[in-house]
Image (cartoon, rainbow, N blue to C red; front, side):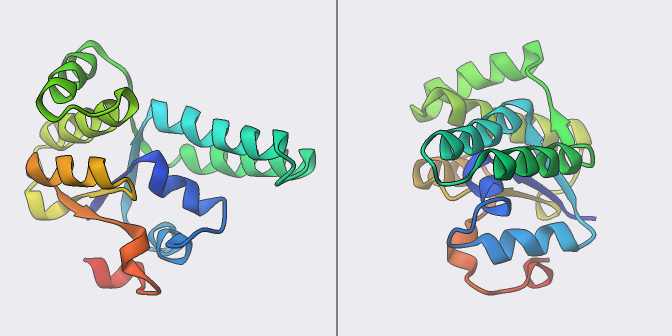
Length: 158
């Protein structure tokens, strides 16, 4: 089974129509293990709240999005901000000069891959953040950007 780690720039495409949303939707339809840091849950929820505050979605849409997000979160393999992830985040920030949240996402993905002990070809980091993508590639992860996948189905990524 393929494991996909979604950072918030990719995961948010599930709930808001953006370039790459169809591809992300496909990941949720296939038999993949999806994962993210607990930070990602906060970031995607905050994006929905900001869209509501800006008038892009109404209060009912915000509540619906939050409920959908939390329901799907229940099936995720999540990575908490445990001491080893925090330590690795500091090392990642130092090595790649990433922003704080991006450092947490990359460190979480690396920690998860190591903890699972799976082969590199069974783990993919999914992001639409260019700096994070470059750093993840340098760190040895397979990386996919939903915006580059176009209308390809998730099944063609395996």
